[in-house]
Amino acid sequence: MAEKIIVMTGGTSGFGAITSKKLLQEPGTHLILGTRNKRIAGAEHLPLNLKSVRSVKEFSSAVISTIENKKIDVLICNAGISIPTVDTKTEDGFETTFAVNHLAHFLLIDLLKLNLADNAKIILTTSGTHNPDEGSRVAPPKHANIYWLAYPEKDETLDEKDKINAERAYASSKLCNLLTARYINTLTENWEGIAYDPGPTPGTGLTQNLGIVRRILWKLFSISFLRKRVFPKSNSIEDAGKALADIALGKISIPAGKEYAALRAGKMTFPLPSELAQKDEVMEKVWNDSKEILNL
Image (cartoon, rainbow, N blue to C red; front, side):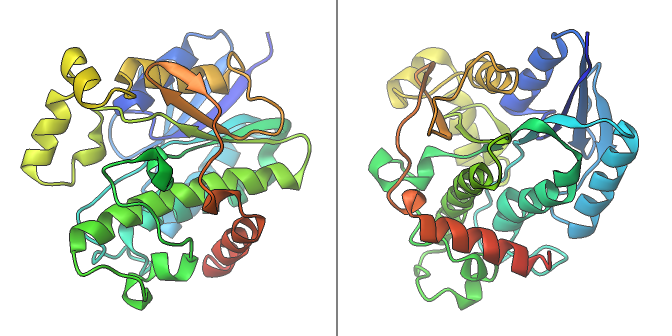
């Protein structure tokens, strides 16, 4: 059986850990995880800090050395954070949430592009928070301006409340993930860019950087009957992780002309993304400006 090489971020905790374990159940899977400390039995682990451009470059070089002359079949960009402010910066000077969720993964895709198989899948984890029509409790994006998102002190649309700005930073980063997946599908007919939305998934580590009350509530809502009552369209960690693995393994196929796969109440759906996410000119500008800001 031919070896299937899968490279993944965000594969050691939350639903990503479930995904990793499901992937490793498939014979012939060589799973390479970018991680800071946690481990998944059976996977290969390479150091990765998504808050650092230097670390992303070192990780990509380590991946290339590890796979030698082989190609990557699936690249899963799943790691993500949400923090309660837009005032923190990475060592490269970018706003932290946007740097981790979008810029680091954009850079990783670019650095590994020559090592992707001809029919590779590139999966980016997005969120329904990108779409105002979803009615999320998270403030939706106002724009997809890469420079304003990377340097929010320049953003002319900032709210007076830091909480709102932080929520928008997260939602906007997820919008850019989706737009990146869309653009990948314009590069070649062979690669498949997929934006996977796990839906609300209480119990993940997404709120670990938020206040203690929000962390406790998020954990409590992972209890099945509470989760279904408060978030009717939500999913368990197990369902969200399995769905991502099934997409990566081709057990869930994305319909032709689609790239947005959204898990809702345990069922995979393929809705249209937000109006902003459907605009080709926005997609192209996000791609080009992301390359420019990262000096690619």
